[in-house]
Image (cartoon, rainbow, N blue to C red; front, side):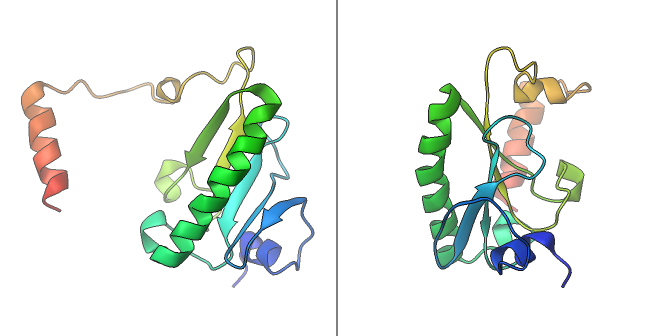
Amino acid sequence: MDCIFCKIAKKEIPSKIITETNKSIAFLDAFPLSRGHTLVIPKCHYEKVQDITDIDSNDLFDVVQKVISKVDKLTGSTLLAIHNGKDSGQEIPHVHVHLIPRESHDQAGPVHSMFKDRPKLSDKELDELCTKIKNM
């Protein structure tokens, strides 16, 4: 497999490691969106969050929780983001959690600013969508 994150996890590619466990690793993003932009990944290759085993998921989010408290001290506010699949913006098909320090002047805006053609759903449509998702 030619996955850059798998290579980082195996230490085949150098990275600026913040912390790691047997199952997860946190390191500075090589192409940061802000100072302190950190990625947390499972060491095993999973493309989507729903593919991760319970044990690896628990470890991943334990590391996220520990590291975000440190990253958050840089600016006092941190965006936590996961792109779950190519169409959601995932560029590397290996689960990775972004911890992006934010500041009021960074001009990135809230997540809602990413979507220009947002749907306008009626209460009935929201109810139908809620029922559909529940029953999948």
